Image (cartoon, rainbow, N blue to C red):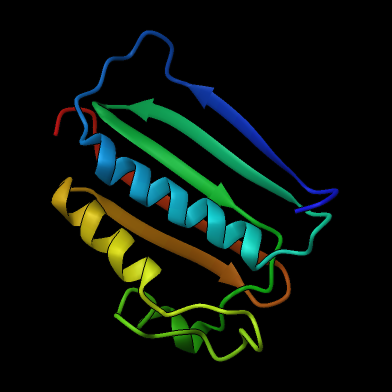
Length: 129
């Protein structure tokens, strides 16, 4: 990501949580690495954390290639890759693993995306797992 950057903002001062560290690391590592992988090298990735009603809300927003609407319904299936990835390497397992980790936390994950504009993943996890 030469020339690019990741901007983190957080609004959870003094909030304690009880989450599985390995699962949380898997979720965030995969989503941030995908944002980097599918975005131009000079773009900005936004990572935001807010806490509301005993939940942590993570948003990772990129300025990447975006995900075609017809691929979004199968996005969390094993081995599924969007049709516009071209030569960008991947196995199609990352988001399926993320979804399993989110489910194990009894959380939820959503995606908003537009081809050519970018993608935002929102993960909502209970603060007490």
